[in-house]
Image (cartoon, rainbow, N blue to C red; front, top):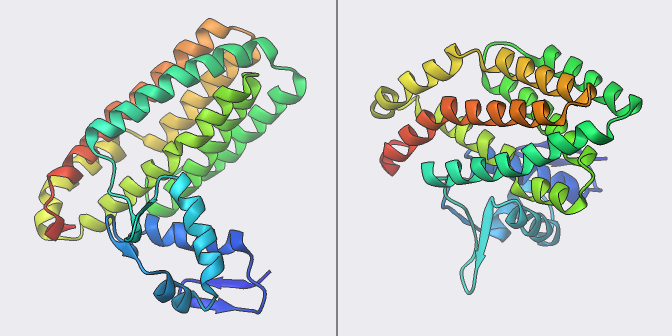
Length: 256
């Protein structure tokens, strides 16, 4: 596999998955800002690859909701989620994941229980003050944990719907946008209070505690309790993070 660098590539063989990850991270880190046009030729030159893997990566990113393709205009990065979109996506999560938690409790076996416990241990090792690197590790844990429960729910269509939401990508993009914007003096006045409240809520520790409670209910075979704990977990995340999304929307584009 080639060595990956944001400023270019070293190596002759570049996998399309590598290109996808690099372009995805350029979008998440706002190196490609929200609403910006993506010039395929310029991007392929920057990454030192042909346009073909870049087009393949953009097609995948379109299904992730991070870029959009318009006739005669090509690709652009999508805007950040609005507060209403973030709320609606979270409400959809609640509908899906109450179902997956309840049904996972019915089907869970010893191997699946061990998987959940192992993932909790991985997540706990990533916990710490909410900074960009810690949050990335925590979100990766969160995606694995919730994805495993979706699989255990036993309904492939529901599991696919969970995967296609790409909630965790949008959440990370919003959080990294807030960290980037807070460096601007005019934006800081709006964002810093919301970020402080989010951090002070002990997001990492609370996430692990919530996951442990959900896993305990699933392993105990109590579907009703697992569903209730899942709902409370997701609703709590919405309550704590929504002020950041609202503050981002209030910032003028020139302040971002």
